[in-house]
Image (tube, rainbow, N blue to C red; front, side, top):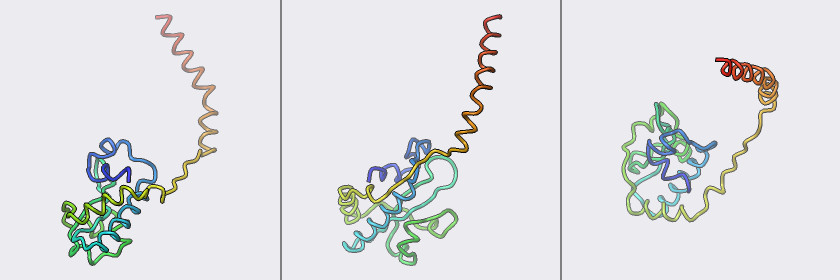
Length: 149
């Protein structure tokens, strides 16, 4: 769970400037695993996904009392979206049993459950490469006019 600490704070991921591609998929896996383990252990806290609006880190993983989360499905807690009822949950610190679940999850190699594919958009690349000649002429002209001054 290499991203968990960043997900716990609005300042995570360099204040939101370095959020990895596919981060919401990692968060979904973390929430589902933590909640299943917390349930089995009798924790009074559940993890949930919260997409924070505004600036800074939007991809948060928070914790709420189990009584407040009981009305939500596992999927709803894992996929939390802006404007949903999850915004009304009380954010609390993990209890002792959830802390044990978190420590166990850190050793579970959950990041291996997510596969993110990044590819080149050939059409956009072709356009960018097609402008290289014009850009080079412009830069050389600007450099030449700087030398004349």
